[in-house]
Image (cartoon, rainbow, N blue to C red; front, side, top):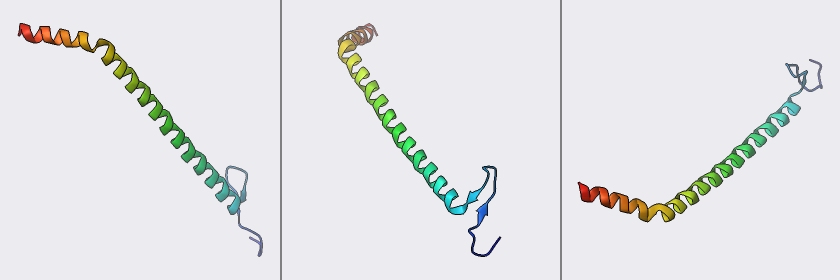
Length: 76
């Protein structure tokens, strides 16, 4: 390594200096965190949609299901 020149990393990617590699790793980690945050929002939306469907089903079928359970308990 020559005096005064930055350390060069020669790996599978063809090489580059350590600072550039650090910037690339930092950018990759930033994108990874952003993707995880986006996934969490998507999961929250899915859970909200499922909750709305469940509440709608209970409202629509609640009385019928209650009548079925009442008839079962009266026969016991």
